[in-house]
Amino acid sequence: MRPEYVDFHTHLDLYPDLEQAIATCDSSRVATLAVTTTPKAFERNVEMSADSDFVRVGLGLHPQLVAERHLEIDLFESLLARTRYVGEIGLDRSPAHYRSFDLQKSIFGRILRACAKQGDKILSLHSVRATKPVLDMLDEHLPLDRGHVVLHWFSGSKADVRRAIDRGCYFSVNEGMLASATGGRVMREIPIDRVLTETDGPFLARGDNPIEPGDVTRAVEMIASSRGARVDDIRARILSNLKRLVQGD
Ligand code: MN
Image 1 (cartoon, protein in one colour):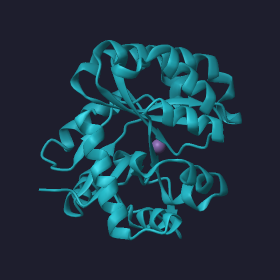
Image 2 (cartoon, rainbow, N blue to C red; image 1 turned 90 degrees about the vertical axis):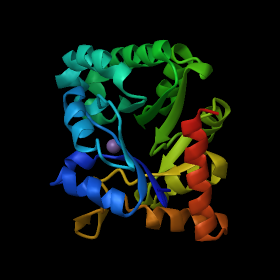
Image 3 (tube, protein in one colour; image 1 turned 135 degrees about the vertical axis):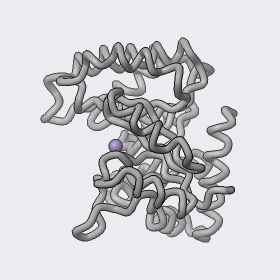
């Protein structure tokens, strides 16, 4: 079965019913990357999605949880060989997480080195107020031929965007990001062949409700309108981008 859409960054296990969330992505035929925020959550996500045609699970250790969960890095490293997908990982220098920034960098460095050693991983990266340090650490710890990078909700400067493009990064964008001034600007700076869609569910809201699992329809429409392109052409481009990424070209 072929996918119809791509949601390359969502937290299905943070919806009230994980089984239902997986079923929704399957019935809507959304090629989904279900990221996790701690390595302890990985096993359950893998078990629940074992029969899914469209959901893949990322092994993660969220930078916002590093202060309290950094000891789980050992578990992360022991699970890494079981998956090609890694996320959510990265750095967060916003005020609430600034104090753990050095610890975040040490954990992120260990993760990148482990990924580089095993090779061919696909990483979904968080980079809040830390786009430059994330790019610096990629340069330092993940050689270009040792892994594939997707920048989730990227908000870097024009120079950071350029740098990320030059290093081969993809960008996963969501409707909340695209509605913001910075997100709209980033969207205009990235080539369409590096664009993936995401929901970052359930954190994005539609009115009073969280965004439905895998519902990237509005994001696709917003990309199409920003490019003056047809919605169906953009949808097809995003599917072919994912195919290229997964094939490792
Ligand atoms: Mn997220």
